[in-house]
Each structure stands twice: as C-alpha cells, then as structure tokens.
Amino acid sequence: MKKLNQLLGLISLSGFILLFSIPNQLSFNSDNQTKIKSHVNAESSQTQIELLSSKTEVQEKMLNSIHHFNNAKGSFVYASNDVGFHYSIDYHVKLNNSIKVKVNVKNAKGTTETFLSDEEATEIDHKSKQYMSTKMGTKLSKGTELKIKDAIKTNASGQKEYTYPDTNINLGMASNSLQSSEIALGFLEDHNLWGISGTEIFLDRNVTVIEGSLSDSYRYKLNTEDFKIWMDTQTGILLKFETYDKDHNKVDYLETTKIKIDSVDLNSSKVTKSDLKGYKKFN
Amino acid sequence: MGKKIILCLFLLGTVLFFDQEKTYAGCGSGSSSILDNDNNGFDSPDNDYSGSWKHEYSTNSYRGDHRYAAPTSSGYNLYWWYFSSCSLTGTSKVYLWNTKFNATSVTYVATNSSGSQITSKSINQRNAPGGWSSLLSFSKPISTIRLSHSYNNDGGAGADGIQLNYN
Image (cartoon, helix red, strand yellow):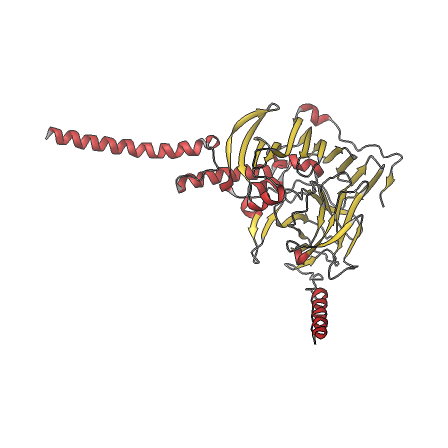
C-alpha cells in the first residue's frame, strides 16, 4: 500500500512538473525570439506562430520607419560588385514641423541633390549646373502606418501586388536606408527564408541583426544567395546590409558611416537647398 | 500559296499588335485606368520621353514590352504617362518585373493638370520585388506621372505599365 501511494505520488508529481514545464518552454521560445537562429522552420505550429509574429514586427518596423523618428542626419555608402556602382550619400531630413528633405548623391560621375519642402521639389545636377523644380500642390505628410497583411497581396490574375507606405515624403536615394520598403516587402517577404540572429551595437545604436536567403527570382536577378541586415531596432532604419554570392563573396552592400537621430542639435538645425545662382533649368 | 499564308500571318500579327486592349480612363469611383509604355503603339499621345530610352520586348514585361534607359553621361532620362482627366483621388501601381531594371533610385512624380506635384516616390528597381508595386497614393487629382533617372545612377532604369485606381 505504501509503495502504491509512493507510485501515485510520483505520477502526480511528474504530472505537476509537466503541467508547468510545457508553458514555460513555450514562453521561453516566445520571449527569446531574438535568440532563435533560423532559416529553420519552427518545430511546432505554436512556435511557428510566435516566430511569424515577431518577423512581421521587424518587417513593419522597417516599412514604417519614418513614423519612428522626426529628424535624421547622416551618411552611407552604397555599392555593388555586380552592377559596379559606388555611391556616397549624405542626407538631412526634418519630418516633424515644416518638413524638409535634402539628399546628396555622389559617385565618380558627379553629384546630384534632391530637395523637398512643402513649397517645392527640386532635383539638382551639380556637375552640369542644371535643375528641375516642381511646385508642390499638396502638403507633405508621413501618411499612415501600413500593416504587412495589407501590403502584400495576390490579385485576381494571380499576380503579386506590393503596397508601399502612402507618404508623399520622397526621401530619394536616402530611402535605401531611411525607409527601405523594397527590402521589407521583397527580401523579407518569405518568413521561412530568414531569421533574427541577434542584437548588436552599431554606431552607438541598438541594432537587430537579420540573416537569410533570397528567393529564386532575386537569386537570378541579383546574382546573390544570402543576405545580412543590421536594422536600427528603435526606428527600423536600415543601417547596414550585405548580400553574398554562393562562395560568400560580397555582392551588394550598404553601410552607414555616421548618423544622428532626433538629437537636440538636429531639432534646431536648418535644412537648406544649395544656392542655384548660375544654374539653368533642365529641359 | 506559301506567300499567301505568310501574308495572312503578317496581317494577323499586325492586327494583334495594334489591337491590344485599349484602356483609356474610366473615371468613376472604383474604376481603374492602365497606360503602358508606348501605349497602344509607338508615338502614342499617352506617353513621351527624353533621353536614351530603348524599346525592348520581353515576356516578363507588361503586355510584352518595356522601355529601358541605360545610364547616361549627363542629365536625366525622363519618361511620361499622360492620363485622361479625372477629378478623383486614388492610388497608382507601377509594373516592375524585368531583371534588367537595376537602377537603385528612380523617381516617379505625379502632377496635376496645372503641373503641381501631388506626390512622388523614389524606388530601388534593383531590390524591388517583381510584380505590381502600389507606389503612389494621391489625395488630390493627378493627370501625369513622370519617371526620372539621373545620369549618376549607374543601374539601368525601366518604364513599363502604370495603373491608376480611383477611390
């Protein structure tokens, strides 16, 4: 009888331990999503849901990045060993009151400037000293935040449709870092091909590190197999990204060299267009 | 007999080429309007361009063709789509599928009938996913969309179909 009681007690104790250990295991996976190294499909459907939820959050942060900062000033390099381009980009954007955007793009051919305000949109070629300017017919606005479920759809003809954020603030070449919708919608579309591999500090910013493989159509187009992204965790700004071929050689890369986000001195600084004295209108 | 068959095939091909679906705007709430590059044929009144735009055929392009601008030495490659007048707001989609489109920044500018800018967006054609990209949302009526591709952007730019969807 004593042995039977001991056996029943042991069974009860085991059940008790099991009852509390299973939810703890699930919450461990849920709470430590950034620790999960994936390209891996989750082992259970519950874990899969948790992973997808977290990845959607990453995608939406990147897609809606301009809703997470007001002022930014910085520089980045963007280059490709495949196409052969190499750009240096400087930007200064104010997105709160009296929105203004100034972006300079420099490469071996020359320097161009994009300037945007509530009054005008101007594209300037500093090499030929020509510019195109258009009056604004509407006020600039950040628009509304976009959900991934509304951004990627298949139409009645079976074709994919990708919706970009509805803002009319055009960040020009700087959008490759400040609002990288193409990466969020394209590279990160298939959640089975990428994962969050960790967190790092980069240029004094907390970044979320993402690693993954590209879909077949991207592999064919970009001569690329894999990618790695360093996304500013607070804002969704893409601070750095690299793509690699099958031998792990770097193909395309973008790297921020300096950045200030919402600092006190940025709030008081002005964003001004270059002096166009001596410049001609482009025909 | 052989010559007659060839002639018939030539005529049929010509009719099919020029008799593609004509899509001048239906301007009504919920309606849409599509303009291709070289809409309904070359020298279309629906398009214009400046710079070096080469016409190319491809199965990956909307209605089988597109315009392609290789990087230039100076200035801008510009391409226009002229839509019929409509006083409604809405969204516009651009078709991006061709693997040759590698420009890292191409700007689409939507203007109203007075030439004022309503909205614009720059897109990285190299990294954009293939298919229809709903790029622009216009809160005031628009009549023209212009694509600009700067000389110092080293990737080639593509111009293909654009669809307006009215609210």
